Length: 390
Image 1: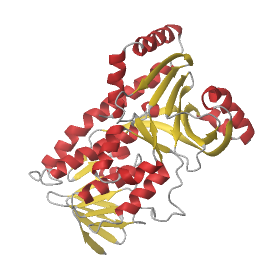
Image 2 (image 1 turned 30 degrees about the vertical axis):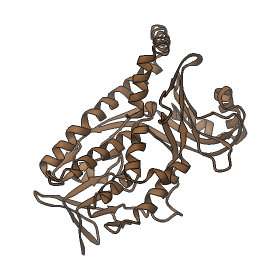
Image 3 (image 1 turned 90 degrees about the horizontal axis):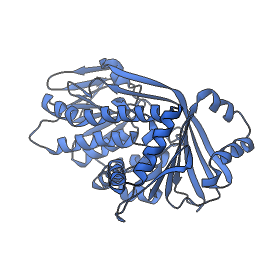
Image 4 (image 1 turned 90 degrees about the vertical axis):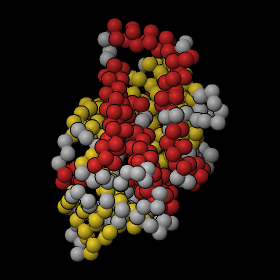
């Protein structure tokens, strides 16, 4: 069995894990990034057709890691967000008065991942290992170790970034509170007639929220991604229909915004669920991103919350007075990351519950609330700042 000595072991090659690897590699730590799949093979990797909504705060952090200049050419900026409550009669328009900052940016997962992996290969202090399935983890006072069939990796800190169904979490036994939603999410990338002019839309239907996010297109087409929460049974029936029917159906829903749908590039369904760990730490182990928490996509903040975890780690790792991986280090990480995740877990769950409520009093007060916020500039600005993460 081959032994590897490193400062930090990161398990999981998703976007949050890759950002974490860049963060610590930038700080000159020896980093090992491992995954049980071959994420370097373009034939098997990058199949995810989803997009990432990057907040201004996350973009600023990516700039500090010297990554944003490579991502920016593929990022579609969002300058305005229109939120509709059932129809365009009840809406809130969010925009940012600071012309130097955007409300967010939309990037395809596969493009994002490809760029981060290619840049990570440039670091001499970073080792990338794939097809490595960790079966044992040992957490001790001065060192942590992870073991697979052929390797034993010793490190000062293990970062679990291996997603909702974290294998590390199963091995260690950290508890998780889970919530499964009755809806699934349809993610569809498509080309359409009308320009969105860097405006994103969210429409709250009684079946669930539908978001439209403008995407970068190399061919100068009008391209967007749709994320629609709806009954899994209904979405399966819809996707079983031929393309012409699907296009007509989606046009009927959002044709006023996007015009005629010219082509559907991809479509995928995902189950909707949320979870949060009882703690984001163990001895010489921290959880980041989806291995620590996941939230309902109603606010589009799930990925940015994971980047927030990495930002908190980055600050701690820059503090040379605290030994990386020590009890104090892990405790401080948990203190800075847990509360915000727990708040967003609750807020997004309650928002989804509220907008799905179809009784008349609820709809009446919801419409009043929309009109109230739309006419209160100060409140809109505070919501905008929160969503931007600045």
